[in-house]
Length: 89
Image 1 (tube, rainbow, N blue to C red):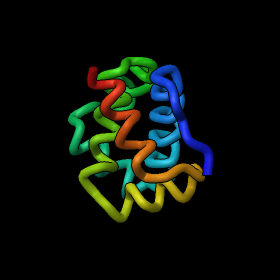
Image 2 (image 1 turned 60 degrees about the vertical axis):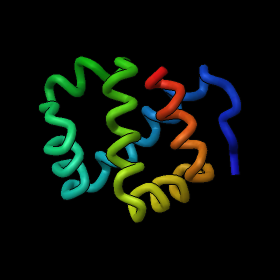
Image 3 (image 1 turned 120 degrees about the vertical axis):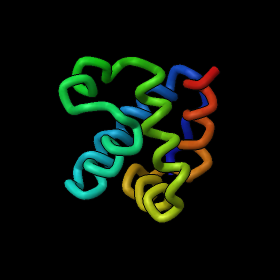
């Protein structure tokens, strides 16, 4: 498994996780509902650390999604948690 070791990796990993999250329509609807962001605003703010952190927090709150996303991205679930911490800082 790859392991992001620097803060610079956090936005990239978060964006990859967001793409994974949005790939399944039901999960995409849940993340939009939970974060309160609409699709147009999401597209406009894809590089915003707050949006990226919120998308990771969504995964961290749903263990099954977190584990599935980590497996899909070939990273340990802790890497997603570290990325969320880095983006929240």
